[in-house]
Amino acid sequence: MAELATIARPYAEALYKASAGDLAAVSAWLDELAAVAGNAQLLQFADSPVVTSAQVFDLVTGVAKSVLGDHAKNFLRLVIENGRLGALPEIASQFRALKNAQSGSSDAVVYSAFPIDQAGLADVAATLEKRFARKLNVSVELQPELIGGIRVVVGDEVLDTSVKARLEQMKVALTA
Image 1 (cartoon, helix red, strand yellow):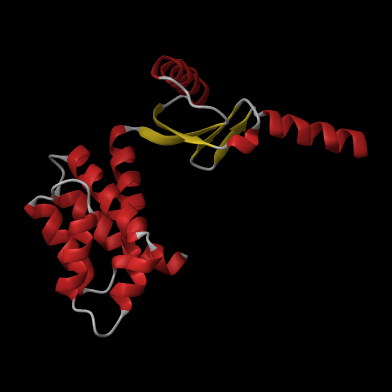
Image 2: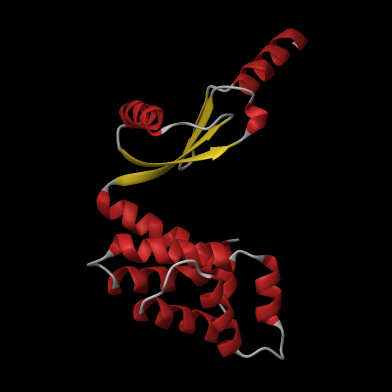
């Protein structure tokens, strides 16, 4: 994994420097391309010796939901021609880290057993920002196995108030 991070770093830094004026838009299309490039079948197709880089480029741009601008297309061509399509998710991750460092914020993933409406998410985000003492970019992922409550991951910090975690704590206490 460290090798992939080492490969991705120069791409993320160069893209960050080149797009200093419009980080939000670049982050949006980069995240979309990273999601597409995370597909194992696409990577297998791209690694085939009979497939050209133009065919891979056409496939990726065809699968992308949004219309990619020239900046995005040029970056994608560069990544494909250098054989680094598999590093695209890591490039996006490192780009997001650079963007967050500049804005003084962090990404937070809230895992919930049930969907959270916008008002509830705003309340949770405000509480979490006070708890972690920084601005958070909150996203929600459903995990029904939590049974109830939420589990929050901010960087390497985890706040777990789920029913599943409490049951695990009770199990440990009872078997000790």
